[in-house]
Structure formats: C-alpha cells, structure tokens
Length: 75
Image 1: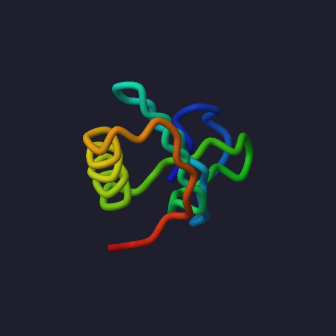
Image 2 (image 1 turned 60 degrees about the horizontal axis):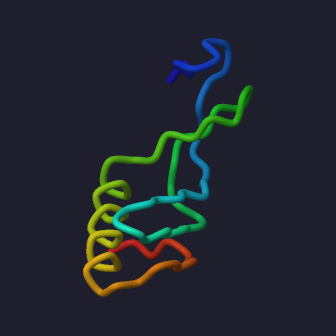
C-alpha cells in the first residue's frame, strides 16, 4: 500500500517496536508484525497484532505492572 504519511513509499512486511502507555504502565513490545514504509520507515501494525497488544497492555495494567519490555509472541 502507498504510505499515507510520506505519500511516496510503498509498505512491505516487516517488524516494529511498539510502546504503549496506560494507567501508569509503559509496555514496550519488540518485533511486532507490521507493514513498514520503505521510504520514511513509518510502521502500520496489523489488526490482529494490535488487538493482542491492547489485550496484553490491559492485563499488565490490571496486574499493577509499571514497566515491561518483551518480544511479540503471536497467540
């Protein structure tokens, strides 16, 4: 797909690091599947991965975690 940010590059499958902040929690997840622009590097996380990330952040926030760094693992 054409990148909506730079409008010049095409996206290709790759990975990204995603940082989520919620209720005092900072969750950093590496190697998240995404479409990455070959021109500007903007990453677009795939819908299924985004849903997993949000669920994980919710669980970590409820558990009282303040900071966590992990690698993405598909469910």
